Length: 181
Image 1 (cartoon, rainbow, N blue to C red):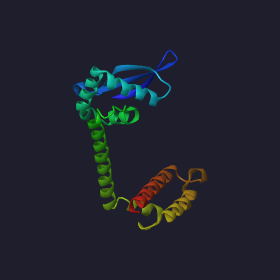
Image 2: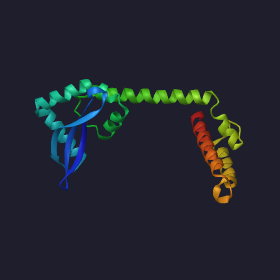
Image 3: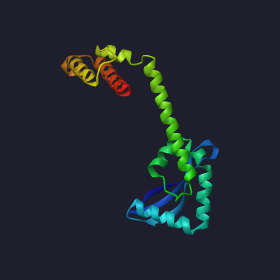
Image 4: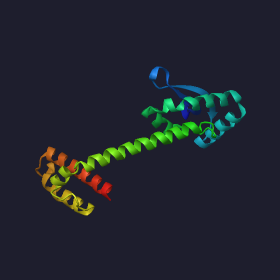
C-alpha cells in the first residue's frame, strides 16, 4: 500500500493506493481518500487511525499483506513502495519482511557478480589502460588518470573515443580499488 499526495484543484489530497497484480502486470487503485494534511507524517497517522477504527479497511490491509510478496517481486513496484510505502501499524509486517529479503537477495547477487568479475581479471584491462599495476592505490589511480586526461582530452587535441575509454577505465579501476579495500 502506498501513501501518495495528489494535486486536485490546487489542493494536496492524500490517498492510499494499493498495488495489485492481475494477469502478471502491476496495477494500482485508490482504496482510500484521506483528505488534506500538511505533511506525510500527519497523513500516515490518520491512515493508522483509520486502520484501527475501520474493520473493513483493516481486512483490506491484511488481504494486501498476504498478496504483497507477489506484487513486490516486481522491481518497479518495490521501488515505488520504498518511495511511497505507507506504514500499516504492523499489519503488513509480512510485506516489510518480503521487501527486506528481496533487497538483501539483490545486494548479495550484485556482490557475487562483482566478485566474479573482479576475480576473473575484469579489472586488468582498466589498469593496463591507465598504465598501472592492479595493486595501485587510489591516489596512484587518480594521478595516472589526470596525467593521461591532459593528453587525451578533446579540448587539447585528443581523441573523443580515447577519452571515453580512459574515463571507463578510471571508473573501473576506482571501483576495483574500493572493492579491494
